[in-house]
Image 1 (cartoon, rainbow, N blue to C red):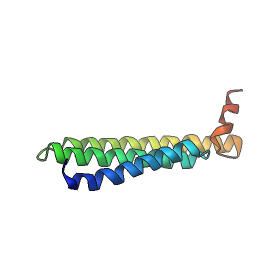
Image 2 (cartoon, rainbow, N blue to C red):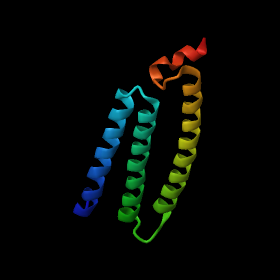
Image 3 (cartoon, rainbow, N blue to C red):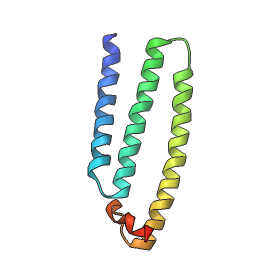
Length: 103
C-alpha cells in the first residue's frame, strides 16, 4: 500500500474507534447520535481513499460517499425527531430508561 494512503486511513480508523467508544459508553441519545455520525464519516473517508487508490480514474467511491451522506442526513433528521418525542414523554434523553416506554 502506498504511504500516502496510510495518512488517510489512520485518522479514519481513529475516528471510527472513537465513534464506537462513544456509542458504547454514552447513555445520552444525542451523544450516541454524534458517535454514529462520526463512524459514518470515517467510512465515507475510506470510500473516497480506496476509490482513489484502487480506481484512480473512476468516481464510484465519490458517488457512493455522496449517497451515504444523503442517507446519513435523513437518518439524523429521523433520529432527532425520535429524540424530541422521547424527551417530551420522559423529560430526559437517557437511552437506558427508554425500555420503560414498552410498558
